[in-house]
Length: 262
Picture: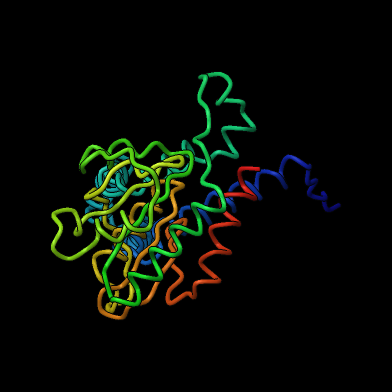
C-alpha cells in the first residue's frame, strides 16, 4: 500500500522562503562576474558527482579537496555580494520598522524634502540638461551615507538650484564628484561613490555606473544628467531609468519621498 506524502504548512513556507532567498541572490549577482563564477562552481560540483558515481578515486579525491573548502572559497569570492546583501537588509527601513529596530536603538528618520525642494532639484536637473552639464545628485533615504560624505567637501547648505548648477559648472573644483542631499540640506559636494560591477550598457559612463553602485548598497536615490546627451536618468535599488522627462522625474521624486515618508 502506497504511503501518501504529507505536506505541512511549514513545508510550503520553507519552500517559499528558499525561493525568495534564491531570487534575491540572483538579483545581486545578475549581470556581474559572480554569476559566471556560480555557473562554473555548479558545473564543477556536477562533474564531481559524476566522478564519484564512476568510482574514479584519484580524480574524485582531488576534486573533493576543492569541494571541501567550498564554503571558504565562496566567502572569499563573493564577499562584495555578501556585503551588499547584508547592507540591503540593514538599510531596509521596512525590516527595521517591523522589528522595531529604530525604537530599540533610538534612530530617527531624516527630515524629508518637501514639494518646493523637489521642484528646486528638478529645475536644476532640467537646466543642466539643456546646457549639457554633467551632474550626479544623491538623495539619501534612511542611510546616513557617512562613508561617502567624508570623501567630499561638507556644505550643509540650503537646497538651491543656483548652488547645484554652480557646483557642477565645468570649471569648478567639485564638478566631477557627487552632490549628496541628506534630509533637507545639501550635505556635501565632490563626493566619491562606489562603482557598480554590473554589466551595463556600454554607452553609460562613470556617473551612471556610480549611480547604480550607490543605489545597490543603500536605499538612496540618484539623479544623473548626461554631459554627452543632455538627458536625465533616475537610479534606485540598483536599477536605472534613462532619458526621463521633467514630469516623470517630478513624479518619481514625489512618490519616493512623500508616499514612503508620510
